[in-house]
Length: 182
Image 1 (cartoon, rainbow, N blue to C red):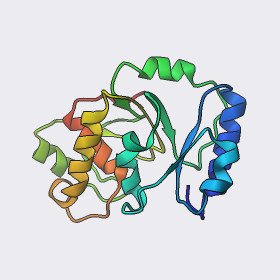
Image 2 (cartoon, rainbow, N blue to C red):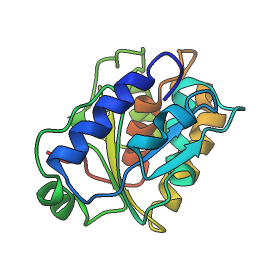
Image 3 (cartoon, one colour):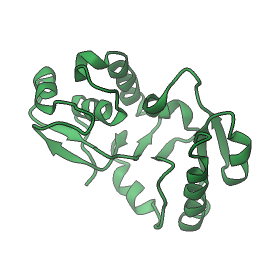
């Protein structure tokens, strides 16, 4: 949560409290809004100020104080109990809703066919628009370590396109043979 979107985080927290009572909530936020968000969350985690924008998402394992984490972007509202979903998704270290594609371009310009050729794979996990993820510690360590590696070498993996965590996680999930959730 940032000074520009902390109200969305409050909305997410309030909807989570109603639809998932008793589930502890954490927020990663800038120091400027931590105190404002404190009444709504059980854990306030100050963001790493050296990271920018989408890069924070490849550090979620470091931000989360939980063994099992269901991450949501702050512009999400929850209306249903998530236990059924987490029970179904808990069989692998990291997942998000998506599918597979073998061509075309992501909304950020990732050439899927070119990436598949580099990776030696025949289909790419695609989680476009994924403002969510479910992961389990410590099993997710490999996922996030690889995501940080791909981030550090973004142009080598993705070409000369803008950085997007979704593209990075598409690459990582494909490399690690992690299936997207239906």
